Image (cartoon, rainbow, N blue to C red; front, side, top):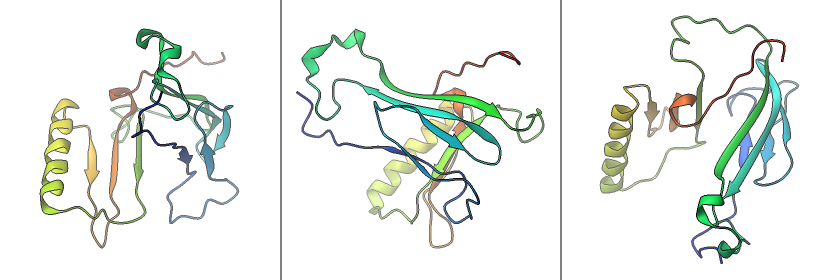
Length: 160
C-alpha cells in the first residue's frame, strides 16, 4: 500500500508569469497518470504528460510491480517552438526550466539556513547553473536551471 505520507498532487502549466496577462493562452492542470494535456504559450505549442509510477502514489499497491520495473516520475513534453531558438548569450546553456511561488516562504531561521545550504550544494553540483531566491517582500521565491541538469532531454531532427 502507498505510504501514509503520500499526497495526491498535480502540476500546473502557466503560459506566462502569474502576474502577467496570459492573453489567449490558458493555465492547465497536468494530472498524474492521465491523458496528455495540450499546452501553448507565445513561444511553444505541444502536449505534456506527467507519469507518477513509484509505488508510493495514492491508491497504489506497492506490491503490484517490482521496484526496478517502475518508471519513477516522468514529465513528458512534446511539441514545437514557434520561433527559431538561436544560441546566444542568454541560451548558451540550453533550455532552462523554472517556477516561482505566489508568496514569500515562511521558514524559521534554522530551516532557512538548511535550504540555503542545500541550494549552495545544488549550485555547486550544477556548475553554477542554478538560479534561486527564497523571496522577500519585493521578490517571489523562484528557482530555475537548465532542464538537462535534471531531466533526460531528447530532440528530434527538423521535419520529423
